[in-house]
Image (cartoon, rainbow, N blue to C red):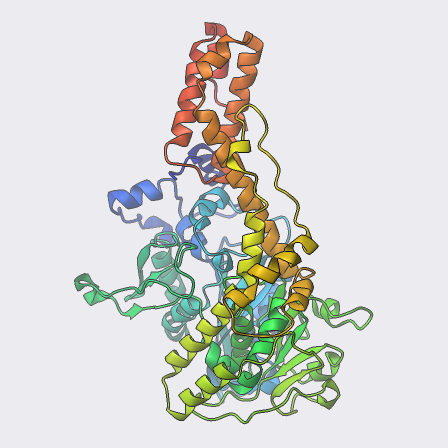
Length: 603
């Protein structure tokens, strides 16, 4: 559907960030004109202002250093007009450095996630919503959190009092493109540590020339002499596959081609505990409180992201923190013993958490990740009382009893791959396919039942409000499982009914059903609008008074505005036809009313 909310976008884009008394021209970068792209690009992004393209990808870039008196401190924020609250700066400071016990010498990359301060409104909201419409739910920008992608360097330096140089370059974004942003950092960070701030300005200039992140479009993105080629997945891609970014004859200048922008290597992450992958899938599916104890932020964050992604394409709807510290703003909230642990996945490295989180029901202890070519001994799930310190042996500590019988075939397949030295990428693909098929087998019966809640299309009358969806009745759904349950697509045996009952009480079901309900209600609105467009409105108007005709016009205008705002899934040409109906009805009215009704609605 074409971008129909241009008036609203124009108004929103005109509202630049409030920068107080500062000079808006914060950098010589603003003196450089944007390149004029092809006609298609111009049509797609006609209203972008300075820094808008940058803001579509990143909120800002931070440099966090260590001060002997103050501790960690944000030294640089770029672009300089970027807004961060004091609380957000504090979170970034503490989360950008590994805990002292991690011993991360050299360069380390990891990511974290923290709450966004309330009250901030993006001037790009409607514009970015238009492009995100086709993104998979797990790749949409996070409305309430920021991601921090970190490149930390610690090297010996005798000229400094501490004897070490310690600094982090951090990309702050709403987008969960972990692989993509880590690839950017590998380009920007080494240059920054050598050339300092001018390097950041150059990088931001380049990013501000990129097209916005559009799902389904192959993007060629130049950055500091390197060219990255990526494709952002769409919700229409076949699950488990993403059309590969193919090399072409014009790619002689392309330095990096990324096959995925967001998928971590799940086999490498789960390798230390892969005898328990099916149980971990259940725990994540049910939104259970989980803590990952790892020796470094890199292993902690990768493992948490792997857990969150193992139920894809289902979106994990609870909170998750790839790297969590004792200084985090939510530390007390998440570690209190006065109530049950919340539905959250935490990644930690500080030994203090082994004692603080002893009361948590499920703990995954990750040792130093071995090379994926090494065999891992089979270990039973350990009792929680055996976990005394972070030095405890790797494994899963939980009293949880899985609902489904253990799938020995996937374990044997992965073990055979290790013995035969199968490439890590192939092992990762096998495990991802296993998780995908397991999740699909579980979610298909739910999808089938929810689809049955839609009213029949013949019940839609253009002159009445759209019919309502039938309510979701748990017992009615349970009865459908006998003939149309997961046994149709999965060979796994076990207590599927018990798993569904538990899932229906979880945040993941609540988030999934809210999303599906919203989609179905929008579909009903779209069908109602399409039915309205097929009516002969002139005949309708002739049968009613002027007051009723004016009322009809106002209602149709509201419908048009709603359809544009909500991006309803309409047939091509529906909105044009509706606008033509509105115009024809107005022309049939007296001239004084025509003048009033032709005026654009005030926001």
